[in-house]
Length: 120
Image (cartoon, rainbow, N blue to C red; front, side, top):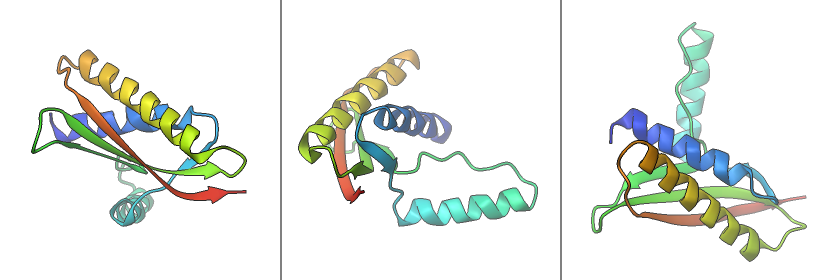
């Protein structure tokens, strides 16, 4: 899969995660925050924005066939964390599988959900 296709996979996963009730936002990691700052600087200079899948990281597994997708999310505090995280995992897994199948590369997908914090 090319870097562009990996970004597309991250974007599909992000859309799926954000549809889950109780998800307030996706939390970018430090690398994604730095890339976002660079992207804003590029936009200010008149260049197109870099694609972002903030809060999502996807990589092809090295020790097994398939993909690993990490989702870092912020949840609303009025929801049960474990239930919401499970639902995010299932929604992202389904979206990633659908995306890979549509690209003609169906592979297994493992999803790890990390809840970074709760929002009031």
